[in-house]
Length: 213
Image (cartoon, rainbow, N blue to C red; front, side, top):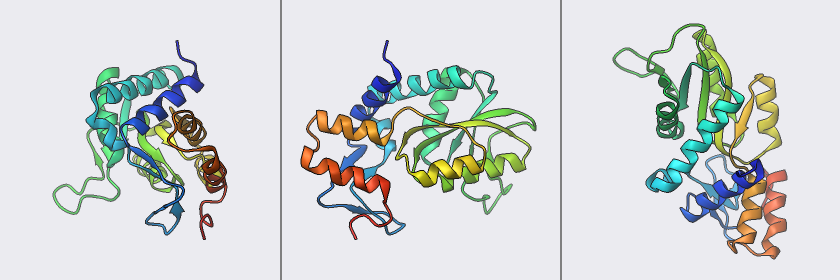
């Protein structure tokens, strides 16, 4: 049986193999925020690989059973958490819903899609945690609807200090199945990067807003 560190690294390995995560410390990407980044992460790509998709689904489900055993429904964060959330909900045989970034502009004007009941305990599924800002807006929407948020689980986190503070401020427990430290360790072991690039990658996570400038 894999321990947590092995699971973190195995998920990172699968995401690298699928090219859901790309590392380019010498030619960084630019995020919409303006930050320069040596990493680009799109975990939706992993959905195209059945073995990877299944391993992620089972790992998320096992995490929920262990840390949030009493939840009554699964809620995905649009759009990245919708597909994976539905897969996990199906495996756990739980109801599924998802939350839009803003209310629908026609029809019923829903922001919560699916049926949730007041007082129901839910687990939120997200694909990626950066600063946590957009993910935590979902918490606000659910709490405003009198839904009890047990916590949030995600495939990957960069581990930024700002994200940790944001989750603490909202009093939301975050659990993930992989993280940035596991990623760069795995990338080094499998020759996606070399040792000369390791320092730059480590420095970025500590000060992403000023890295490369």
